[in-house]
Amino acid sequence: MPKLSYAILPHRGLITVGGADRRDFLQGLVSNDVTRAGAERAIWAAFLTPQGKYLHDFFMIEVGETLHLDCEGGERLMDFGKRLSKYKLRSQIDLGIAADLAVVALWGEGTATALGLAQEAGAGRPMEGGAVYLDPRLPVAGARAILPAARVAEILEPMGFAAATPDEYDDMRIGLGLPDGTKDMVVDKTILLEANFDTLNGVDWDKGCYMGQELTARTKYRGLIKKRLMPVTIEGATPPPGTPLMLDGKEAGEMRSSRDGLGIALIRLDRIEDGGPELKLEADGATISLREAAWSAEERTE
Image (cartoon, rainbow, N blue to C red; front, top):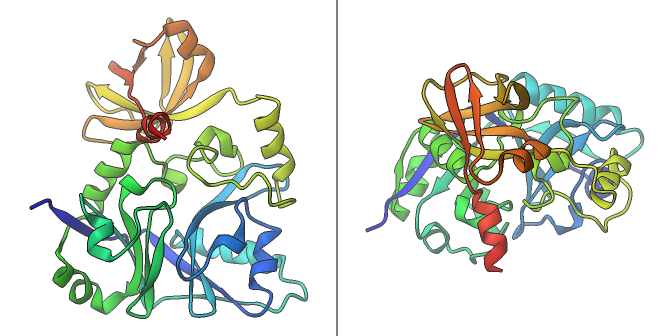
């Protein structure tokens, strides 16, 4: 039988947004259409600077009458919460942290069927006081869940899921070319199209104004994007994040997250044109080759 795996993600946390104005409050702040997020639908979105630069990204689904934002944990969660609170003003909202719930990744062939979910990006449902949903970026990436922290194994193992590690989840994520917060995006520097939010369902182009919308729209409609995050193969010692990638003595990109010979890198698009389809980059003695992203292959089959 295909292996189904789950891993609790300790580097993630949950911000809750309740109250009568919860949707209107978030709608003017984030890149995706908050009205699409509900008990049976999750979205992926970003919170930007007024200049359109990356600050936070998160998954959103509703549990009861409260929106739950699956975001980076620790100091990053506290920063996100403080930034949201600055915009509260007179909005009828309640901001909080769901400390009793864990963020869980689930993957493997047959994940959607095992969880009773439609095979559609973001399809979700309530589960045991929390929720479960297919990754809204890419269904082949499996699912995510928010579940009572003390009962994760009790809930998932009878459904056929076996415990795995966050590193094993990272292997799968990097293999698909999916970014993971500040492992792959730089605060106050990355713009959304560089991080493939356009191809991974992270931006709604019709929702109207939100913070940072002007730059995001301009990069799309004027074709201003010059770099993109791309999956790569690494031959040799793995370069640490931030290592420049070189082509013929000129900088062509920058390394981001990696594991076990695979990685994600920010690549200059003009260097891809210079190097052709067999582009080989150098970084501290390692050879970096481009791989096809799972999301680009999926686009061609639609």
